[in-house]
Amino acid sequence: MSFEGKPLVGFGIEKLWMADLVDKIAVSTESELIARVVLDFGAMVLERPSELAGYEVPSIPVFQHLTTHFLCDLLVNSNVDFPLCQPGIIDRAVELARANGKVLSNPFAAWALTSEFLDTYGDQRKISAHNNEFEDERAGDIDNHTLEDLLKT
Image (cartoon, rainbow, N blue to C red; front, side):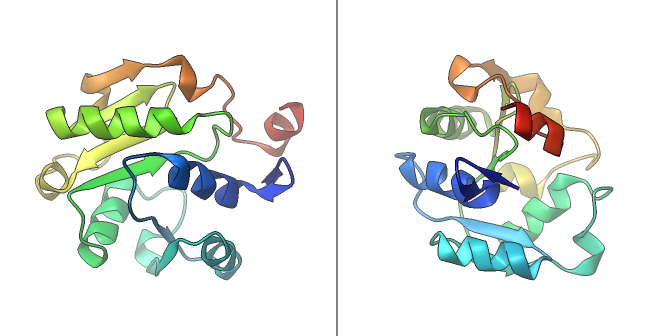
């Protein structure tokens, strides 16, 4: 899917590059097409193994796989389904996660966790960052999970 003439994943990568507190971007995917777009937008690609592919896989094992291959102190998951999210929300998520170990914007445009927190994560099917939600209008109020949603946007 595309937004403003760009693939959603590319649009999301551009926003991450605009954030002041992001210094590297890596995307985990099993899709060759997405991998090509990711590289075109200047990010790194980590091939996602089949056991971590699919919609039924929780996010935490994917995040842990990423931090195993791309060492970092903090991981930010920027949800490209929120195309109107502003880069400042990413910086705010990073700042709050540094202080709290984990944070989730409301709406759910950005989710940030420290590597230390990821290493000791409990139940992988529960998003414990809900305990550290922050509201910020810069997250945007449009959540595009379907083509119909995107076309409305």
